[in-house]
Image 1 (tube, rainbow, N blue to C red):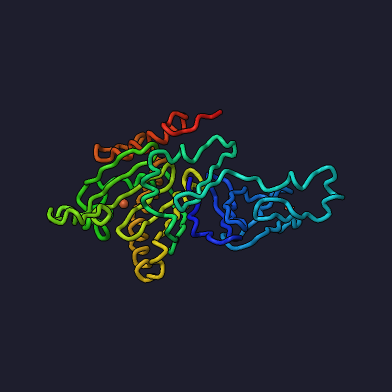
Image 2: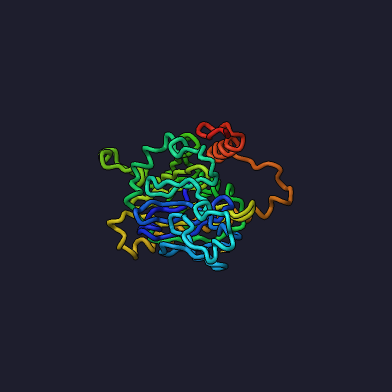
Length: 332
Ligand code: FES
Ligand SMILES: [Fe+2]
């Protein structure tokens, strides 16, 4: 899954702390620019090695007994090591590393260290579309990461239908979209949805050569499992649903803009705020849904025909759990 955007740790020595699928993770960029993904746990007795959310450091020293690691993972110093740990080798006590690759501007990680997961296989047929968005030439200019009291799948589902737009978003984006009109297409485990703005129906046929879909629709990519890319006319709102527990999700919402236009700070601040307020409407409803789940009022959720994308998303989740998804990697 996507853990970060490369611009959040652009320089050698930069690091980020994340929680990925329940694992404490430390992402580092070493002196030649390679990004690595380690478990953020000291190999001595398991203290969290790094507490800061982000920063720039070439070595990390454990706050308990000062075992010290390079940002490429090796244990480089440990006080009184030879007397206390006779027969052990520092070379065997580097940080535990997980698979990690930087592609399409993002840092992709796997929570399983067995090496069975290939990123190419995971990305599959959506690769060309990710390439076309040029996200490796973009930067994160704003980011919020609040925790919401809802399951991550409820929050993903909230973004892939237009049935609620005129109701839940009536005072924000609702007036700009057609009522209950959206389409979706599966690309392997991922999805591309199109939600029409009202401006689309007003386009004059003679201007057809100048039409750009992203000016008149919300183009939304749902990258399995937990990433949404809301493609706007001049930027991308990138949302990562980071599950903390079954009923708790950190929603990391970032405004991703072309590097060359990063200094238009007021414009991006305004856009970030509009997206944040709108998504908050969705997430508040998500928390409301979560709060009734345990009551047993609904043994099943009902998806109407125009909520087919939710059905498709859940089928993909089920298929991955069963190991039968089109681009799932079978357990060895
Ligand atoms: S737990 Fe880290 S040095 Fe002891
Ligand atoms: Fe919504």
